[in-house]
Length: 248
Image (cartoon, rainbow, N blue to C red; front, side):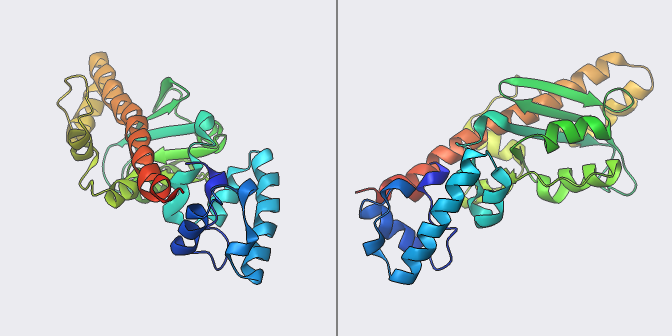
């Protein structure tokens, strides 16, 4: 599903009205039929379409994130897929005030990189990677990863953020990332470690064990790469459930 299929950002257009438009042939902005709604709503839709076309041509994902209901930001993915950055962090604990970020893995356009504390994990690198993307994707990152990074590195990220934890709950996929991976049959290459192991591996690395860092990075990268598979699966299901089933 693409942004151009959406009318729900418009004031006065809820799910039922949007579905009515789709069922009656207004499946995208260019095919909008104003006779399907009242005059005032039609005027607002046409005004939105004109403005939205300009922002879409400019690649302005932030405009759409501000206009769409927060639970519908998954609809931005198809349009901004090439400049979507999947990310996941590892830390020494759960508190952003008493713990630090150890690694940050970033997966974008088929490539994965990991920034490591004491090496290339800097505010500038994070701002370039996350701030320079059109869309960022995490699992529980709105409550954990992003606030942790913003506090530890004095950042203020305004990139539209799809938190897959909430997207998955919408599909009945509950629990943590590993539980969702198990439910969807997504592999971790035989790795059997968790967040506590990640803390232990970092301390082993600080004590001089380079192999521990290699294992930690591989674990962090699986977290990040698997987010893409989950989002592809989720958006495919939501496309069918939200949009395709209402087509004429």
